[in-house]
Each structure stands twice: as structure tokens, then as C-alpha cells.
Image (cartoon, rainbow, N blue to C red):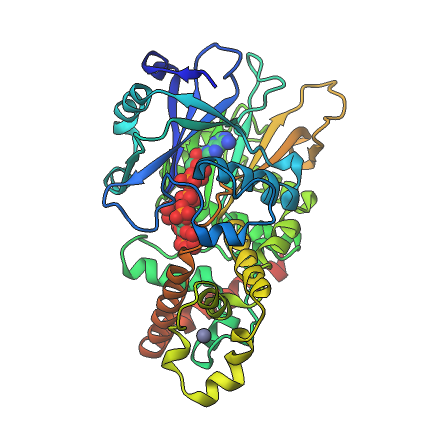
Length: 458
Ligand SMILES: O=P(O)(O)O[C@@H]1[C@@H](OP(=O)(O)O)[C@H](OP(=O)(O)O)[C@H](O)[C@H](OP(=O)(O)O)[C@H]1OP(=O)(O)O
Ligand SMILES: Nc1ncnc2c1ncn2[C@@H]1O[C@H](COP(=O)(O)OP(=O)(O)OP(=O)(O)O)[C@@H](O)[C@H]1O
Ligand SMILES: [Zn+2]
């Protein structure tokens, strides 16, 4: 593979966004090879966090876990293993037409240094503090830019892209959930995590979004979820127009939507949604609802999330058997509880323990991915789109629709311990909050009741 990008190429790439692990750049040059593509560049944390995916290939335990998945264990670097994971594990589960595993291209160190410098002022300061471009990586991923329609963003045409990070859409029912944590069966992890995030000042307001609405399969409830995402987008909702962000936080989360933000958004939609002033946002939320409802992709995603069948409170025991270490969780319980509840997990054959952890990690990817819904208004006279067209009755417009999944990274095996600790922290904090400030919970359920009455009345 020849080096595709050197320092002089950095000018052609512009900041598109980032998550905790990758920086994403969009192409703004004229080379046919890169038009309609983004680059996904791995970052390293500035404090050398141990949870980092790192630069080496899979760990010995990960080799054991993924031994039956084509070529994964013989991949020379972790980046290549990650790409094979998307290709051979996530793509078949989510649908090949909705996943682009991308291709790796070589980049020079000077390119990475130039990019780092170029995008610095656009990155959220907390992301800059947390991580920087990994200067040691020699290849990066080139992926389709899902925010633009390739087949015809001609002059005067518009493509609108909605990015949604739906998070976990079901309540666990596992018998391995400790009695003290029973609340997990009735309150979503998203909601409980919001309380902890607010306490830790990671967010400034509680999200109105409920993943159970999003994954309900009901058009009304999906609509409610989309309206909630619009009101409190955090890092779960963004909108791009021709690849430029017009709603939501660039590179991270954002505050609740205020009047000014709402007005600007309404204005930005004027060339795409043919409705009178003040009605465009509402029509767009309707269009997104219809696209999600009709695509059936949320049901498919939910099935993959449900590969987490026994909850982290069950998985942690299988993890300890795989690493052949005394189980830290069982050590803290009495003999009866161990015998009645967890002994079976510790007497399973190794292959079953591996399957439990493997499925859990696949589900973790599915709980953290984002969906990109790209809409392009059809020109009058267009024939049916190969990607499936959508008719928005209230504006008398047809849209081409393309749905893609992004951020399908393989979660590291050793993160299982962190998942367990975070889960306990989230649930304990929530239980304590409800015990000490029960009015918070009452307030929330009153609001939920009002919301559901409203949706019945609608
Ligand atoms: O644990 P969660 O649910 O908070 O998810 C993390 C996300 O936080 P969120 O709550 O969505 O803001 C988090 O997103 P942000 O950095 O908060 O935007 C990451 O996606 C993280 O994954 P990774 O470390 O990049 O592999 C995510 O970690 P995983 O749990 O998916 O490994
Ligand atoms: N293929 C793509 N097309 C268009 N935009 C993209 C694409 N991939 C990523 N993006 C944009 O870049 C942002 C960051 O990408 P991504 O979610 O892959 O980063 P990450 O660091 O892996 O995220 P996380 O924190 O969830 O692990 C996305 O939120 C999205 O706005
Ligand atoms: Zn145990």
C-alpha cells in the first residue's frame, strides 16, 4: 500500500466531528478517489488511559474470544482486526447495505501532525483535553460520507442527514441481577445514567429522550422519541445539511434546544422542507419518524442489542472464568447466594463462557452505534429510488432515503470489568437518589403520565 496522504493533503480535509476514540474528517478537495468520503483517525488519550484500544493487535484473551471469526485473530494490528470485526461480525447482523466497513489507507506522520494542528480550534475543549490524534498510526479508515448523497448532490440540490445515537432500547430481565438492583428491570439504563451524568456535571439537563419509545415499534412513540431528541439532543441527535452541521453538538453533546437555536434550525431547513415558516422543524421530525418506522432497522438493531441476554451482572462471572481469576463478585457474597444464583455460571464449559462474553461485547457495540439517515428531496419526475423513497404527505414531497450504521467498533475484552463497575455505580447512585429524594422520581413519573395522556389524546 503506497502512502496516500502526506502533509500537503491536509488542506483538503475538514473537521466533521469526533467521539471518544476517533476524529472524523470530511473531504473538501477534487480528487475522485476521495470525493464523498470521510477519514476516521484514531486518537490516544492524553493521560494514557488503560481502556484504550491501543495500537497492538488483539490480546490473547481476545484471540480466544474471536478465534472462529474469519482472519480476526491473525490481523497484524488492532486497526485491521477492528475493520474485520465490522466486516464479518457487525455487517451481517445489521445488513450489508447499511454498513460500510471502509478501506485502510496509509498516511504519513506529517499528515497527522498537520491535521491535528488544523482542526484544533474546532474541537470541543474537553475533547482536546481528553485525547489527541494518535501520531503513531500509519493507516486510517476511508469510509463513505453518509451525510451526503453521492448519486447526485448536483448544484442546487440538498441532502439532509440526521444522526441518531439511540442507545440501549430494552430493559434487562436477567435472573442474575442482584435483588438490590431490581430497579434495572423497570428503569432504563439511559435514564439512570442521566442522573449520574447530571450529578457529575457531564450534562446540564436531564434528557427527555426515552430509548424504550424509540424501540417500541409504535409510530406515535417513535415520534415522541424524536421530539424528545430535538428538545434535548445531547450527543444523541445531530442534523447536517450538505455535510455541514445545522443542529446539535459538533464533536460531542449539546444543551437543550432554546428558542434561538430552534429559529436558526427552522431557517436552515427552508430549501429542503417545503412548509411555511414555523412548520418546517415539525415536518422534518415527522419525516424522520416515518423513515425509522418504515425501515424496520430499529427492530433489527434491538435484536443485536439483546445478545446481551444475561446482563453484565451475569457476564462478569463468565469473564472471571475466562481469565482464570477468582471471581471478585462472588467473593463478596455468602455461600447460599452463590449456590442458588451464580454457581451454574461458574460451572459452565469454557466455550459457553466465551459465547456469553462475545455476545455481550457485540451487544455493547450495538448499544453505542449511531444511525445516519440521509434524505434527498426527489426532483419532479424522478423514478423510484433504488434506496427506497419516502413520501411526506403534509408537504407533498418525496425523498430518497439511505440509512447507514456508523461507529461499529469492537469493544475491548478487558472493558468488561469497567462495564460492571460503571453499571453498579449507575444503579447505586439512582437507587440512593430515589431513596433520599423520592420527589425526583415522583416528578419524573408524573411527567411521564402527562406525556402518555397527551399522546393518547393526540
Ligand atoms: O457506557 P456509555 O453508555 O456511557 O457509552 C459510552 C459513550 O457515552 P454516552 O453515554 O453515549 O455519552 C461514549 O460517548 P461520548 O464519548 O460520551 O460521546 C463512547 O461512545 C463510549 O465508547 P468508546 O469508549 O468510544 O468505545 C461509550 O462506552 P461503551 O459503554 O459503549 O463502551
Ligand atoms: N461515515 C461517516 N459519514 C459521515 N459522518 C461520519 C461518519 N463516521 C463518523 N461521522 C461523524 O463523526 C462523528 C464521530 O464518529 P464516531 O462516532 O465514529 O467516533 P467515535 O470516537 O468512534 O465515537 P464514540 O465516542 O461513540 O466511540 C459522528 O458522530 C458523525 O457525526
Ligand atoms: Zn462469580
